[in-house]
Image 1 (cartoon, rainbow, N blue to C red):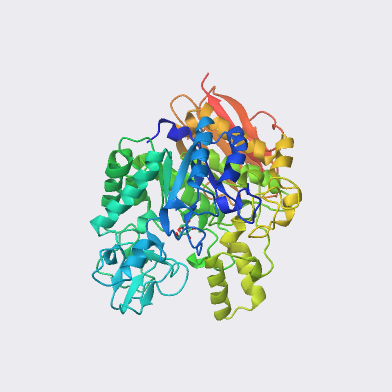
Image 2 (cartoon, rainbow, N blue to C red):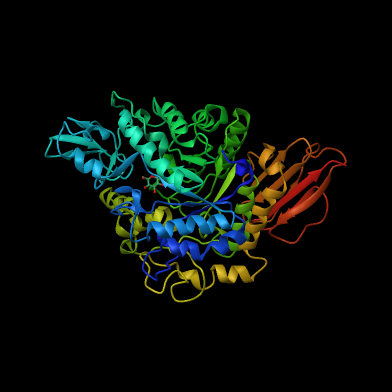
Length: 549
Ligand code: GLC
């Protein structure tokens, strides 16, 4: 694992929507090269690029048809090598997205598998004579019938994303060989897509749920990751992060504890389900702020105590924009975005920031289903209609929940297509691109962008951000999240007000040791009066560093 991991910040790029060098409808790798100076200025250490391998794009590249080739829509291998070299020159590592729970049904392995039951590649996938009741995460049964052989294959995602059979040692070798190919090229890390789903319980049992208990953190997943570590990661300085679906704290400690030699860190999603009423994503719901703090606190303390390591994030390409979700996308967009940034970047773990988050991009307020492209959203819309909602009601849910909320083109400047391209982009731009964009944020020293840049710099400056423990002072408060981070020689105090109403707060006695000095490192308002009591303003955020006398 890399030396700098605990003080690093990762920036996530969705290449399709980042920047089009060739001035086309979709972004490309040279578009990323064009923006490297900006990313270096921001201070990020790694870029995680979502998949740009050959793909029929049913799930925007998470349906890989050739792991070794770059989809021509994104450029060439030479473009990728240029990106690696230019990024390295700026001290930035490139992380690849590895999608090995499934391949596209257009992958050569699957095509071979279709040739008959005794084909070598047949057993690279999961076949049954009868389906069970497992459900696809994109809706409907997780099994698709293949008429030629009369069997069903498993697909936990889209029907064109067939699950790989990790029980097969030759499949595992083929995956590791592919990962070594990219590691040998000089990539600095891997993000592993839904990696905790790769080990299915071989009994393929059913329960009254959707089957997830039989493949989430499945029976052999740790063994497979340890093998991946031996075969690919060992002897290399790679940052590895696993995307863990519906996982548990105990498993994430095991995935990321260095002694176990599995991964550097894990993503989990529990904190982003606090606005799912009864656990259901496709329903409108207010977010449970006390629940959010409880989850964040449990993971902060649990990972710290267990020796694991968290990947910290509010946003990614599968999530609505955080300022629309937990902040205020209207009048208080700028202050609430800064508050959210500080609340997250003050925690222990490695922060990930997703393109556009640093300029407070918000959900684009989709009006019509025709504006959307995402397979999951389109399926969900049909299911909402089938469940009895009318079009307006269904669209209200899609507008708040869709993954396309975060996939609109990056807003670089106020030109016609926001500097993303000179052609109409594949997914429509948000209407606010004229004033929410990188160029105007760069010019304003008080912007959200400059705030993020300071947070990233602070992580490198103060060791307590990496090492300090975590203690929440306001677990039940309806709008305040106040926490401390403490190491032997310094301490941080982070105050975040999730709301617009005026609010006063007094620090309880004894939190700050006698005689310690406070320095305000960052706030989204001018510095308040000195003392341990505050009159907080809308979406106020304060980050203090405390040191002994
Ligand atoms: C992950 C990706 C998501 C994709 C899914 C299936 O959750 O982040 O975009 O649809 O895996 O590969």
